[in-house]
Image 1: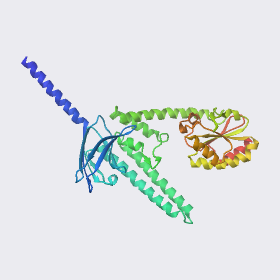
Image 2: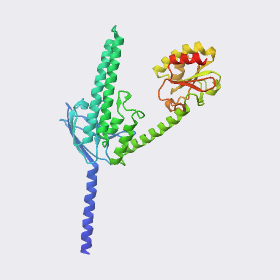
Image 3: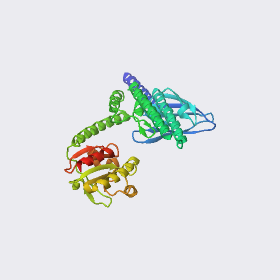
Image 4: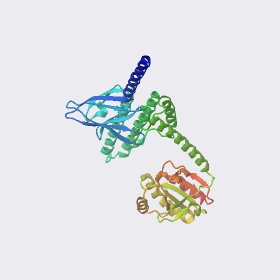
Length: 388
């Protein structure tokens, strides 16, 4: 009986110790000291796969010291924020004890982190982005200063070239970062990083980076929600790629153009096939897209010149609202057929015609066969001379 009680007691002690260890392993401790003239209220926000959630709110003491400890189930991304524009992104693993120092008001450039390898990598990545964005801002200043210069066109050309070089250098940096850190979740942030409003790595052109990173991270973090989300993204990209390939085969020159049935501004459904017997230009555009608006100005001249010979334009707008669409039609004095389901790039016709960017055009002959794709106005004029 005594022997049984001893074994039972040891088992209880072991169980309690194990539970405490598991709790400690799930907890992270974040301490820090910021250079500041007053007490600060800091927030810690979790960056999930779909949202940004406030995890904790802490106040520094008069000397800028603070501490937070939280239990987390898995590695993830967290933002320590002093205010809307003053923050730093951290990659925290369960069980890490992290110390952070920096100057309040300029965390992005002054922050230093110890105790979290992932956070150190993220600081490096984001700091490099910030440095290159500052270079671009300098180019923007030069652009504004040179607007009224007699050699403005040459200056503009040089500035555009300089911007392209900066962007490409950062793009190569991001690629190297991912290649050098295939087992770090920090590479997910690199994968989806933006340069201003421009995506750095394309899901189509740079698909190998998405695929390879998903594979390597799945080996280390098979149940992590960020890795699972990336894996799903890779599957979606593969599926869309296959869809594009199949659509492209259907859109080969000489094939019959797929049918389109969409409403005009008055709500009347107009089919593409109803224009058979004419040479038809399908023009994908949107009111919010300035290059599309410029293209419409050029198309108006060509339409006036060739419509009496059997030339029609079937404009497909990728707008979101009827008001914006109608306003653009009136402002550009468009007098050819216009249709839209107002579903932006989510319209089924976008995948049907493999539209990845606008303006995008397809030219159809009198029999409804595709004669040319993605042509500019000079090429269009040559085709019209031939087909009409």
